[in-house]
Amino acid sequence: MKLFHGTRANFTKFSVDYPGTGEGGRIHAIWFTDNFKGAKNHALLYARQPGPGRVYECELSDDALILKTDIPLYEQIAVYKAISTHLPVSISVQKYYDHLFGDYHRLSGKFNHHSNDEDLHNNILMSAGIDAIHDYEGSWTDPYLHGSTTVVLSLEKIKILEIHELFC
Image (tube, rainbow, N blue to C red; front, top):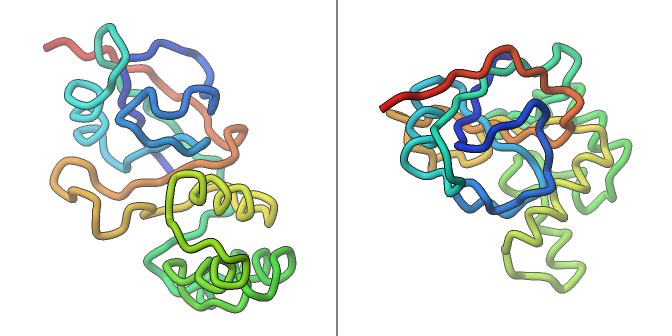
């Protein structure tokens, strides 16, 4: 799967050590879009780092286990198997990604949905072997410029193919 990451930072390897330095996402994962134009828009208009814009053209490895939020979990056999095998029943019995953590929060007494919860969710999914979440923002994504958002949890599954320097 080809993915694009827009930023002003200059690096040769992705890291989750700098959450919130891009557009403001505070989870310990890397955000990608499925189109160059969306990544370019992000690099030039939203990235907070100094310097020229860059688009990192990347590839997600073929063996990455990708949870697709727009498809019911029971239709994603490998994902459903990983979730049902490794996660508590309160999480693993859900049919849809949007409901995946509802019972978990109800049973644990946590009801707020903050970035700390998102990190917790992503860590739980990573413990089940989920490497990436496709269409992470769902209907909140701007389809014209951004395309679908994929959040990559397992950085070893990302390969940088090319770095495009942007000149305005």
